[in-house]
Amino acid sequence: MDIQQTAISIDNLDVRYATKKIISNLELSIKKGKITALIGPNGCGKSTLLKGISRLLKPSAGSIHLGSDIDVLKCPTKEIAKRLAMLPQVTQSPQGITVKTLVAFGRAPYLNQFGMLKDADHRQIELAMSQAGVSELADDYIDQLSGGQLQRVWIALILAQDTDILLLDEPTTYLDICHQYELLNLLSDLNLRGKTIVIVMHDLNQACRYAHELVIMQRGEIIDIGTPDKVFTEKMLRDVFSFEAIVINDPEANTPMSIARCQKKTDSRAA
Image (cartoon, rainbow, N blue to C red):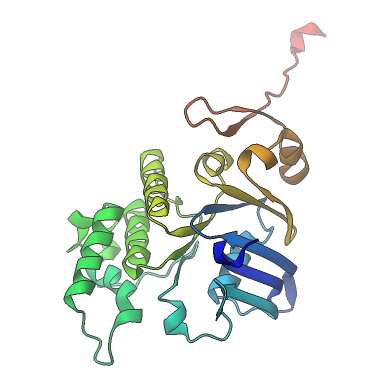
């Protein structure tokens, strides 16, 4: 792939939890300006891969580069945080602070030694809250929010960080169906403005609808990569997910979608 069109390059990556190796010798190039969805069964390494890219987990071997020159594993944390934002699956919310205060943490990489927010920081915070649909919650305390509201506040925080690359681990968790699609549409809009988005998704039909490329993982390895219409097949669902389904065209988005096959029921009266 042309290095100018690559947002993230991963070579021979190993990532462990303690002594257990989760990812081994992984090679991957994430396309710049695209939405890439990581899919695969539970425990296959999707979240571990995002944590390795963002340095929440330190890889035991391999290299990660942003673009052609930024070595993620050697670059200062503050500089990485200006280029890459990560929303993990599990977040720790500090107590006794307001929504706006939490969202303002997204501006930390840009603060000077005195830690003072500038006018540009305040504008970005307001914009991020508006985009995430939490402006009306700005003065509420985060420990008073529902799970869905809090998830949108965390989305606002990484939007306030204003990076070119967003990594999101199951961001629709806790969101009702309406807010799920609001968030995915927001990510699509941000992508149209040039942001590269890498997202772990469990809803396969949503992944096909919103992602330009699917990265299919199984047991810490990449099984296949490609556009949804190329790699999202009945055979893949059977082999990777042990899921019997038919794949049809989504009449709304013109992308593949799966429908589970009905289990045939036997009529006990027929015996």
